Image (tube, rainbow, N blue to C red; front, side, top):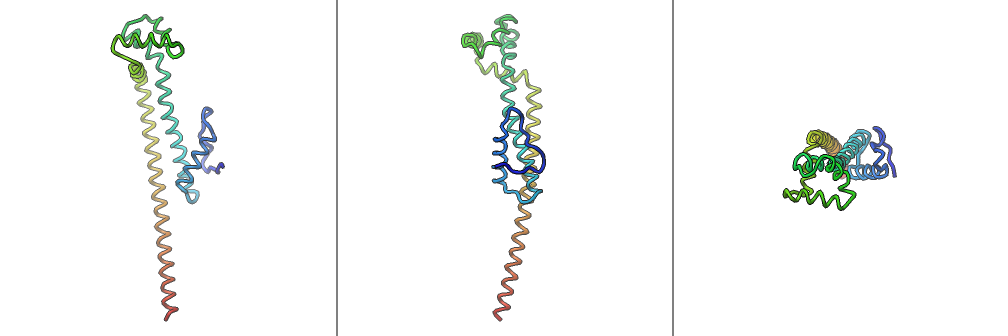
Length: 183
């Protein structure tokens, strides 16, 4: 069940599922229960921003994984000097697809008291400025989403307060009318 979006088209990349996005959007709408176009527009922003946040969280891992071959070359050739540049390149390109190569890399690292975590750390060091920018973007999006959620909560609380006051007035008027009728 797809709902009409007031702001713009779904922010779904070609690698993502429109059905998953729509299911997520509908779950958010059902949970927040916006009332009117202003609240729906704010919820759309929360949905889109949260979708971007989830994408960034997934992509961070992919960024680090992509840097593994470069990290292996740097560790084996430049940092530990256990192989030459060409052998380091061969090991880096084949360590995930050939179990024997992976064992050779791990054996070389073990001689220095290191393991696969050293590759991960080296990959993160290589990507430090990119990961920092990535994390700043993530933090900014989270702040935006949280600010929008607070605004939405204020609007909904204001509507609830006005509704309670209106009901109190109706009840008071009804009580007054009943007491007049009883006289």
